[in-house]
Image 1 (cartoon, rainbow, N blue to C red):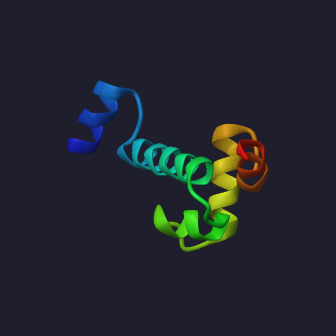
Image 2: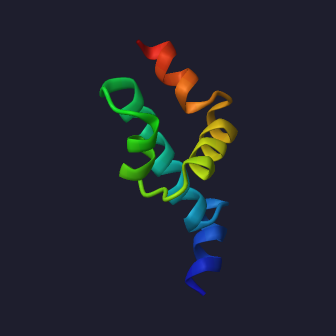
Length: 72
């Protein structure tokens, strides 16, 4: 019931909101701190670097490493 109510109110799933929030935090970490892509992935809860890179690329249209380089 809660899951359907959330989707009805916000037009997306709780998991999608959580994933988006985690990726936004990772993006900020990569831009503002001198850490590796692996460290950023682990800090936001990804156990797999490949999964993180794929999700980041899907959301922002750029790889995490390329984004990090562009911010420096």
